[in-house]
Amino acid sequence: MELIKNIPNDFTIFLLVTVFSLLIGLEQRRHHYSDPKDSLFGMDRTYTLIGILGFILYIIAPQKIWVFVSGGVVISGFLAIFYWKKIEAQNKFGITSMVTVLITYSLAPLLYTKPVWVTVLVVTAVLFFIEMKEQLKELSGKFDNNDFIVLAKFLAITGIILPLLPHEIVTEYIPVSPFKFWLVVVVVSALSYLSYILKKFIFPKNGMLITGFLGGLYSSTATTLVLARKSKEPDTALNQASSSIILATGMMFIRIFILILIFNLALAKVLAVPFMVLTATTLIVSWLILKFEKKGKVTEVTIDKHKNPLEFKTALLFAFLFVLFSMITKYVLEGFGAKGLDVLSLVVGVTDIDPFLLSLFTGKYHIELNEIARATLIAISSNNLVKLIYALVFGNKAISPWLIGGFLVIIAVTIIFIFRF
Image (cartoon, rainbow, N blue to C red; front, side, top):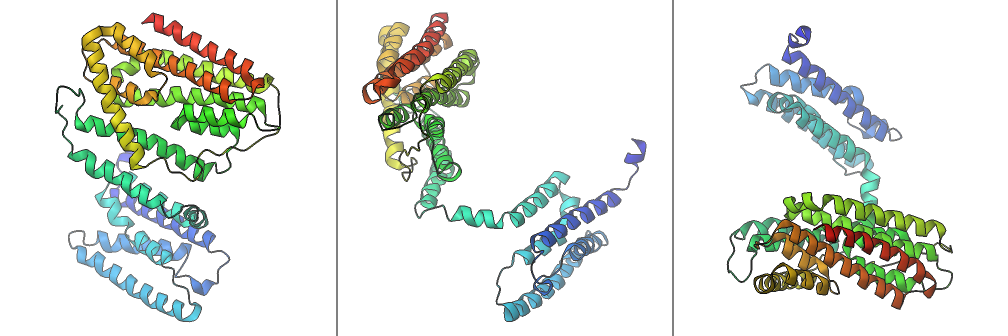
């Protein structure tokens, strides 16, 4: 340890600059291995020497940055001449290698002025983006004209509108501040958008199980309806259809618990065990159905494949329902207390339960955590019963026994936890 402490800082930084510059140079050589040698400014040795030059010009006069800058200007001049001749000879216009040279030259001052992890992060990013050229090109081709516009809207509602909203409750009739209200919209939209991105870019061909998995992150009820209708098609894998419906419900538990963690950490501690048990139960039931039910051919499923869930109409409708349920919940609690909230939770299960649950998680009500936990589980249990009815009405009759058994097990476990609270 004493020996390590006595190593000069300049020596350590020199080694780091040399190693990082060599790594970038080696990556350039590997990436351009089949290219003509005269099409490159340099490879491993050149990049290493450029990094060392940056170290020398910075360390000899750290207080006179113009020395280091002058070296950068000279290198930029050589790069400009090389680039000009390259265009003349080969008609190629890419400047990725040119920018990589300048980043390599800048490693020394970065190591001296910032923590080492910053430089490691920069080098990692450089290596990643050099190597990922073809993959990024392929990825960009998957975006349609509307994707970046929608992403820009999401950034606007997150980074511009959200910080400007007040944190205080504006009116006593709505027990949620404008900031918390809009934060709910942002988080729910983000979860929906994540599901959309995963379906479009990671799993473009949706099998039933993938549909259940990703659809449950967005809307387990909508996913249940689609999969139930799909089960009526000839030669459909019935075990996959019913297993995927149950899997969507399992993902609903995960989605709701993520929302609880974000908006009410104290409630998350109370509901952690019930949600872990319910999620595990659902996954086990889904696996048992997949293994033992009648099999068929593997089928693909599409749920609004080209529809982006991150739309203002959807967000505004959700916002309206969130405010409405906040007002109704406040009225019910003031007039009927916790028993009234239990009844409301049971009734709300026939609708989209997310706005109601979020009004519970975020509202400032005079109510115990156990009562909120019970109301949450009642709403979920009621919603699961509604999904079972949807699946029985719209699905293949052959999957009914499996779905009835599976949902009843999940609902029974939920009721056990309800009575605990």
